[in-house]
Amino acid sequence: MSDEATMTDLKTRLAAWDVEPIMATMDGGFFDDLPALLASAGFRFRSLFIEQTEAEAKRHSPVLVAIPKTRVDEFLALPEAATGSVFWNASGCEEMAFFRHLRGLTMVRIPVDEKIDYGRTHMCVFRHFDPATVAITLPAMRDAQRARMFGPAISILVNAPEGVLEARRRENWPIAERGVLVFEPSQMAMIALALNDRSQRKIIQWLRGKEPDLTSKYDDVALHALVTDIVRYARLWNISSEEGLAWFTWLWVTTDGEVHEDENVKEFIYDFGNDGADIRLLDLIEEINTQDSLSDFA
Image (cartoon, rainbow, N blue to C red):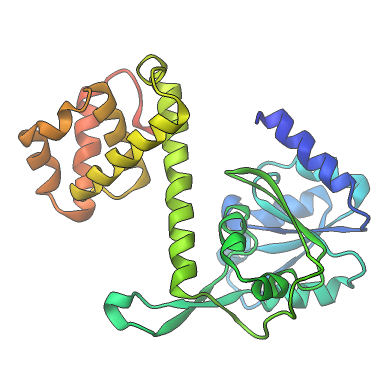
């Protein structure tokens, strides 16, 4: 979907909401100074991390914004607002009550790495203000957990890497779980698979744009299968970053798979160890790829 179509979809869905104002949570990490941006545009907001006192932390903390329906277009015109916001239809809920609900979602409990301590959990921040996180975690939740996340909200709208997505409260959901959300190992595995699939779709899209002639012989299913195999092989070489996996995929495709048979290349990359494998791979790509900048994968 084009940027214009995405924006039209967002505006159409928000216009259909019978709520005033529309609530949006925003990820301050996407912005240089989110409070300053919102204040200069005249939007009312509250920090979701009220414990933060340092100026630098406040600039990048998540916030809850109250958007008058008459100013939705103006809000969406702010830099990164369309991709850096989670929109909540909290019709009938008083603003401070909804703020307290969101504050209660700030922390979740997830399993400790079973290789370290099986069965134990630890607390971490839940990025319910990040559209990409919401799009990945909500499908992995049980219905009672979804009811807990929604709280008084009727629907949630995001512009995620998968596109514009809207989730609506269902009448048959059970009573919301109480307290902190707890994710089980099976749910974390679902989230990990979804993240991996998202990453591979991004690599495929980038690869088709970079090498249209070489990738035109593959339909989407075949190219996804090929990239899945290449990524699996790349991980055996200790390549782990998304950028590294993308460039290894490019190297494989442009050499028609010969890279995996070149022991010199493998030794150059693999023997440098873990994080260093990505560094050595990018060094190699930079040497042979003189026409394009490494920064074109973002």
